Image (cartoon, rainbow, N blue to C red; front, side, top):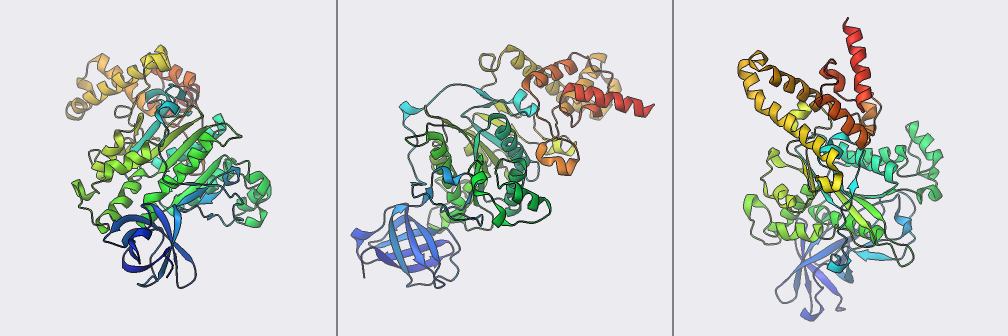
Length: 501
């Protein structure tokens, strides 16, 4: 038997033990191994531990169904790698860099390993610049920093994925930026919706013929224009809910590798500003937890893996800005049972520049996006970065809403009549502010029937100041829900007053 081959000695779920003849030929940690399945397809394993004299323990990147002891395992001599180059624009990949969109294979020969060191300290960039998204609640209360890390916290079904889709749409249109989307352990349906949305909005370009076919309900990949596809502004990498934990634990790194390639460029092309979306970073932790016990590690708090902070650090330290370009990352973070102290979301907190918390209570009021302005924060909300007017307006909005929150207990027990005139006015304006933080999204047009809007920061500041200064007190609060600018709200208010006569 050749020294670069081993044999499967044990299979427990996604964890496979491989025995080699001689200890000196054991594969390195993180090296990729290939198993030829009985149906002649390849299964990729990743070496995790060297146990005993000549045995290694590996995680499978796909289902281990059909494997048996004694099957041959071949060393590749390198880690799992992702294809890089301009050909990858507009394409869909799985965790090991294979295309999964049904289109012709990638021609590029170049590839990057998914396990890489973070950029050196002297190459890092530390400038503070605001990335305006066109979403009022975000731009005003917790502005995103270019090259920063942003967390979208929320329980199940409060709208994390919808905000991510809107951000991709807005930023592609406004900045013509490149996006990489990592679908980590989320619903396959959402991935399908995202691809269709991106094709419809022109972020991914399949060409006019395909678009016409898609609008009729068809999906004929023969009509895709490959020249148009190369002009796409996004690349997608998926390891969804139905995949084994090995794939879900590595797909975030696969997506990040593509984002790093776009950020740094190659020798010919310079760096770029990239957006990297992860939906959902909790599933990355969850997948690590699933394989941790099978790898023989003792679980720590709440059953998570003892290496939770290390794994998170290895991923997050690579998401950064260099002198060549920046990666701005938006990470949806599922909060189990709405408990922000759970170790998985709590570990992620330490790495973030801005936090957008989505609240079920606000969603129940019919206010979307359901951003909680009192829980959400940003490192760059300071007069030096955003300017004095923006900073003062944001603080005033928070003060008004905080006062309303304090008064809610009194209102619940004694009713509105017991409040002073000043407090009554505060409550009325706070309720309008709360509703004005909502806005119709482009990606939700088919559900709401309302045209989506992008609102500039100048219009946002002007609108909130007018509400808090009492310039629009005469209009009903429903006029401020799901509108873009203050002019839209006034127009809607006049219509509502007219109808009620």
